[in-house]
Image 1 (cartoon, one colour):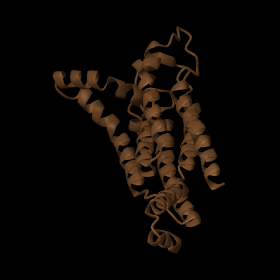
Image 2 (cartoon, helix red, strand yellow):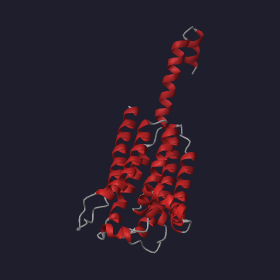
Image 3 (cartoon, rainbow, N blue to C red):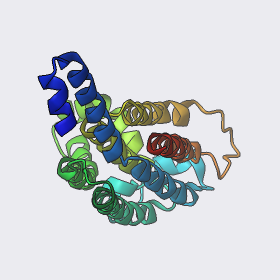
Image 4 (cartoon, rainbow, N blue to C red):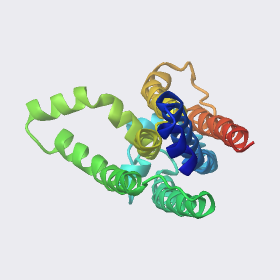
Length: 248
């Protein structure tokens, strides 16, 4: 810092400004620690894929269960909907708290820290919103005036599919990554969160148009979870390599 001051006194303001910009960029790179949440949520999403094996197939989409616990996170149509809900409740809370712990650990090591309070708040609100979304939409679609229920069913049709397939937790992860991308000023995080949203938007199209035929394969629903998991893992590996290059 004293060297910067001497340069300014000797008539080198441009060089001083350039050095400050380099220092600022180095500090920003040092505080980046987003490879961990990408890999963590990638592994958590990958671990959820066995729960989406469903030998019953599309016919189950027309025969809901009796509102299993945590239907907002796991849906109420797949064979393992209740297990999906309980799994993601634990996985989301553990994932967000684990990310908070990682950032604090990283800050102690490098001396700078990204403020993760907003990210944690987004995660908690996302979990609460996911829990409430299913019951609220179900009430509006079935227990209100016909005009209201028809509007809800048509406007929120893609959301109902995500609810039915237990994909709302991945939407919570995507929103959290977009918030973290803002805090980290990371294009990679923003692109990952955006691509997750795109994959979720394509899930209803896939489920409604896939030519499964009469013999529905047990793995029919897996792509809706497996592709987001692979995306998170791949971008997590890319972020890890970027962090290693920045340290060298």
